[in-house]
Each structure stands twice: as C-alpha cells, then as structure tokens.
Length: 161
Image 1 (cartoon, rainbow, N blue to C red):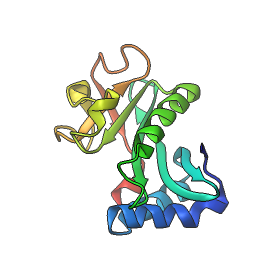
Image 2: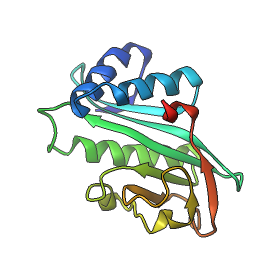
Image 3: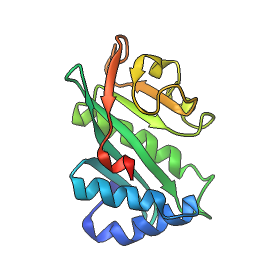
Image 4: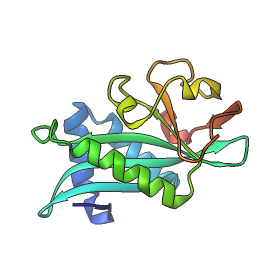
C-alpha cells in the first residue's frame, strides 16, 4: 500500500534511504528538507506495517512563477528492490504531484531508470540549474508546455548540504 508518510515513519525512512544508498547522505538531505519546510510531500510503501520504500518531492523556485518540484530521493529497502516498488512509488508520486498542481518535475537520477516514466534529459535542456548539463538531470512535464520556454529553477538550500 502506498500512502503519505507520517512523522512516526521518519526513523524507518532514514533506515531505508541509508541502506538503499549505502550511506546516510540522502537521509540527511531528507532531514534538511523537512527542517527547512521545503518538502512538498513524501510517500511510503507500507507492507503490513513495515515500510519498504520512500519517495520525497520538494518545491523548486522557478523564475516563471509556476510550481515545479524536485523528485529526490527515492529509495527501496535492499531485498525488496527489483519487485516494482520503486516504479509504483514514482507512478503514485506523479499522480500526487498533479493533485498538488505541479507544472513539471525535475530529477537528478539514473539515466537508464527514469526515462521509463517519461523523464528525459532533452526535456530539461532549457532549464538553468546547478545540475544542468548532466545526463542524470531530467525533466517531465505534468502540464503541457512546462519546459517549452527557458526557465531557471532554484533548489532548496538543503541540497547544498
């Protein structure tokens, strides 16, 4: 079952991200985003009271005044990977982003994983950001034309570490 994260989930979310990435960097990023109030929403995979996956979206500041979001991080507990939980989280999160009124989503992620959801580096080509130009920097339009014109986005200071 995919649901919105609750404060009681924070310890398990830290564990999932630390185990999935092999280091605590993403877990620390999540803490910093929460502390800054910059997280837009978090979803978890809850299988009988055991959290197996997590995804977080944070708000971006765009110079065109539209609402954009950063997908980061997304993690599935080792041992539960390759079962479709990550894909389910991404799909559910994109639906949630639509409900939030997000215009477009940016991700700095695996260039062979995220294109299956429609994220493309080519779509992000007109976006100025600290991550621009990386093949891992990809975008997905939620609203048609979200990335049709050049835009500049600013990430939360939490990404600076």
